[in-house]
Image (cartoon, rainbow, N blue to C red; front, top):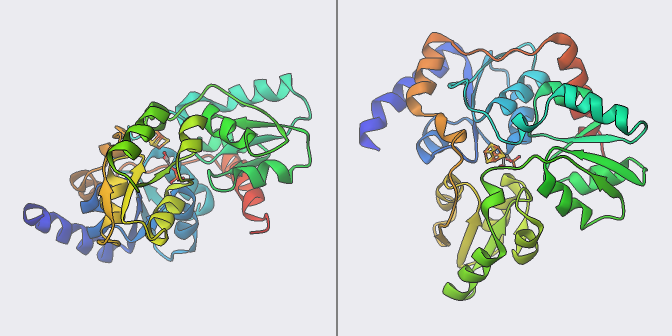
Length: 303
Ligand code: 13P
Ligand code: SF4
């Protein structure tokens, strides 16, 4: 990207001057992911790496709930987000007040929240989960019924793999709910031998028709290790660009959906955010405490 080179150089200089790191989610465009990102991964790995880093400033190249999770795990650091409008259809589907109402309606039933939620929602729940460990988290609670919020599709995918009864909420990822089992059949017909990898935020029939489903990090690892010659990452569009750079021998076929929230983050607004130290993400102390307890309960589970 020759036209972007000066901007990339300027961002990398600013990071050194300000002792800042850029957390780049797997759905960032390749210029961000490969040229200015310091720590790359799925939403939870980014927050964990943020907490371990000795940077003073964290720039979240991702969406708002990810920046909040970084703040919850690293409250002493300054967390910035380049565009405050970078939301998520799952995170915005539910509030802390909604969770309080659900708990009142189902007293004693443990509540698990997906990591794609606000800190406020995490603080109201018993334990967090990711798309990779949701079944393990649900089963760790020793209850025959569990409430798993807010993704109805993740909940159905988990319910298909456990005897625990799962109650859920009507949230959905606007990117993954659009994929269909017919898309997978069409891809297999058009590209014999193709390996199809998707995310558990997709409908059950899509996950069941795919070869693998996992968090974005698990998807990338599986694509790299599968030995496939042709693969589809049936997810957000930037994933294939970012993974393809590490495995040039794999041909990536690219049907995908754009996440409008992720795409709000650009090199330009990363530069402004770092230069002006603007758009700080803050979380009230009592919410940090509650949300951290819920994330920590998940991290404490045996691997
Ligand atoms: P991961 O935690 O798998 O990175 O998911 C984040 C996300 O936004 C998926 O749509
Ligand atoms: Fe949210 Fe879906 Fe976008 Fe991920 S891809 S940030 S879950 S809307």
